[in-house]
Length: 285
Image (cartoon, rainbow, N blue to C red; front, side, top):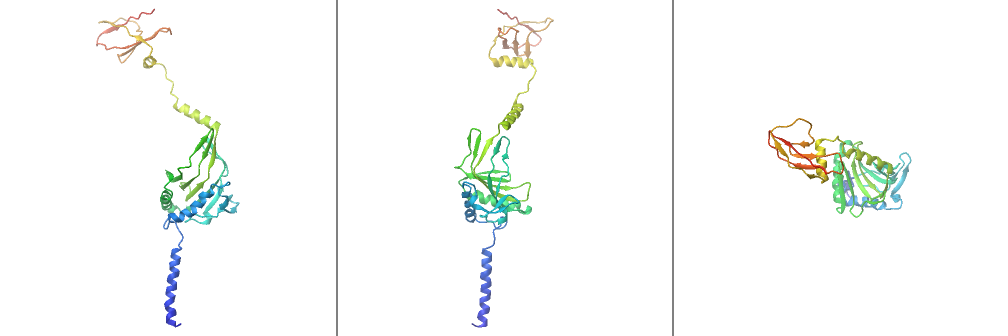
């Protein structure tokens, strides 16, 4: 083979090597997110393993005693093996009125760079929303939750059965974006917590007690629906001194009441002429 022919084949080899290197460039959730079909291959394996008797058992790799977790055998595209873990919830997770039983979770961090959080979350959010169009998607602030429409929350007595789900988080307290897959979990109602919450709600919505007023007296008679017709008043041009026995508000609504519970109160409405004094006579049998 001549020297010239050797020189001609070298650039071709270099070009081929460069093309392979470019094709194998690792995915990155900021500048080179994985395509949906590539992501689906890994995610679906994780999702299927959440149904195992011990969720994610087949995905457990080397155990990390320091963090009480296992490195996952399946790594989501665009992440690293050191950031994909299977972990126990170390204690029961207590909510306002329920306790979620201890369980395993699979999680992968997409980035740990503060400068990349927003871009990584945006890329992952778009991918997940187009990933399973038959899944229910809920977005709360910087978190996205998804689950199949066919899997629903079930409540039997004081026990809640939560379906499998996946979530994307952009932590406000740490510099990372994370995808987590949850197995089906069980939550049990805490009776003491329920009592405390109910007491707080009762105190919050209980109407404040108010002293009886003329307005409240009239309102109570009207709302009861039990009253006698008001007698016709006798108008005069001058009044007499002494204490009135009528409760009058706004000059229109009138109630006459006695202490005897067997006597219905009198109630009616009137229009009065200015400058006049009106007297009522009530006859009780």
